[in-house]
Image 1: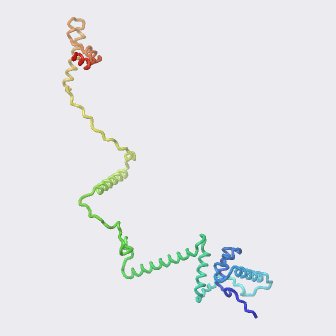
Image 2: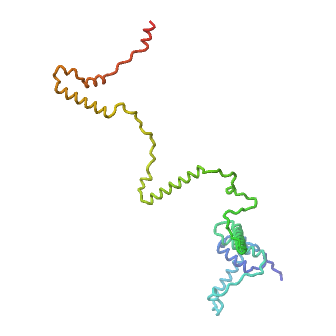
Image 3: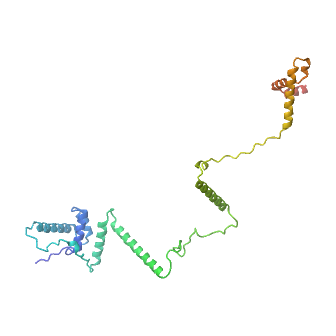
Length: 277
């Protein structure tokens, strides 16, 4: 009898489960992609295996005999799960982990790299957790310093001080203090319930005071002048028709004369020509 040699050996339970899950995700047309999950099987072998399973299922369904008691478990979820075999080789374990990562990936390609990154992050988290526990057991508080040097030669330039501090108060400190006081005042005024229009007033321009020259006539002298004018008017009313009324001073005429146009100044150029001649 001729010995039949199958590529990759006989189908295993893990390969069957991976094949079923891959068919559920990729369908029955992408056999090359399904076969990429199985390192020991080709696309033709995957298709033939699925076809053989379908034939067995149809034969069982088309069988007219009665089901025997216990042939189908009515409550399979109550039974404990079958544990994974421990004696799996490295290739099969790697194939199983890669298939899990690729079938669980719903964001597109690069599932292998993402699965590796996830494993690395999990390993990093476990290492940091173990380190924290060891430090706590040794009596060292984890994270008690806010800024820890990452490397012995690392220099934190924000914490270093290149020059010595200048003695005395700095202008920046004074300005910051004044701003702080102003903020506190505004906060207090708002708490007291002052209207918002107070805080929206525009800054007024500072103008210098209007400085006038000292008056040459005092108020008393001004009153005396007014009294003299009034007395002159009363006298003019009584003796306006007398010939001596012309001796009184007429302020109206002085106002008219002062209101007239000033005379033009003589030309300096004409005087100079007359002197030369």
